[in-house]
Length: 454
Image 1 (cartoon, rainbow, N blue to C red):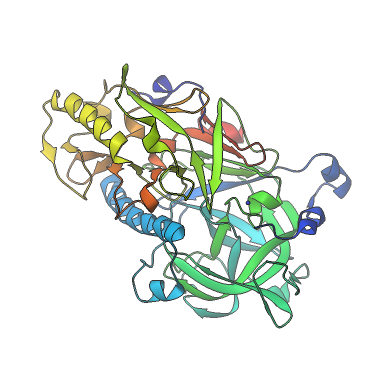
Image 2 (image 1 turned 90 degrees about the vertical axis):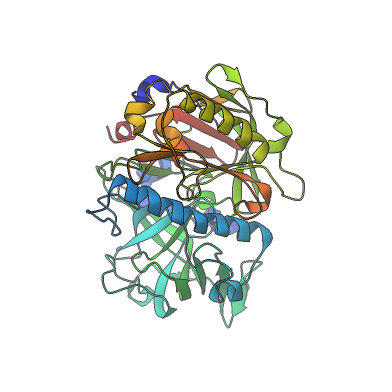
């Protein structure tokens, strides 16, 4: 069953640092500064899925099932990161193994920094609010010999500008320059120095676009197992994020994450971000973006779910997070149980063999495209009557030995950040997701990502 036939146009879905930072951020491109002042250039870059043929982690011999298995393992680390970020942890927790040394990465982006521009492969993360890269001198895990990009050396950049003390709440003062210390529970911890620098985006079919005086971090002490990336492109809600510096809007379009040759996924930051379709409320708590989920429909049946189970408490417990680093979705038990029961009842009628694998709740022998042709539409109903309409490809993952599994798990104390539900990337396939932080709205619209390049 074609995804296009299932989905229709629909949509769902900061401490103050230094005020003058935003006013000094300028945007230029190869055309002219004057033109840039009239219309900001397009700030876009291709998103590279970890298993894409463009990824340094691509394994040509891996099957679809192999990649799905690895994604499930990365999700365990991502959930640990989300949980640690909402409950608190220390660098010692990571180094001692109390918090896993993995980041649960799903997407990367190629950007360049400095003058002359130095290409960097970075993690795209909506759950982090600082853009940082590795800089010399580097201690700890600083990349491997087969790293596809060179480490950025600020001493060789004509546009590098240290961020001087006083820091005014931006980290601590290390002599004369502002320093940060971040513990990423899911994969990295780092200590470094704040600075400003030129950031360059390159799309698949457009000229480079350079943004000057962007606040970023030069990380020197790093706990990072992943030796093929250089840092994190933080798109979180705080003032230090690239998003907040460049206009408070961004959007991404995600293609088929099970197809290594699908290279059309794209990230757009700034005023050209695609905020299209129906809008739903976007809330912020800590480092994460929250949505208001009100109900779930299976086929034409409204599931018996109390909307209160999706509410976030004033203390931050519960709620529904939308995340770029999770593959599967985690749902609160009061929503997961009736959805699981409905899915199981339908598939049991198909007489498919039940299997148990990778701790996922519902797995069967078969192929999604063949055995679930008539699987009912599942609709996630968000605030403002914004529906996310999901077909089988947005709900199931192919697994080893010719089986498939429901890509949704039940939230519990071990796998959920303070009881929250988390909307993962499988559900966001074939969809353009637009974030408008100023308007506090999020949009979802079905879109073939290739159209963004046309």
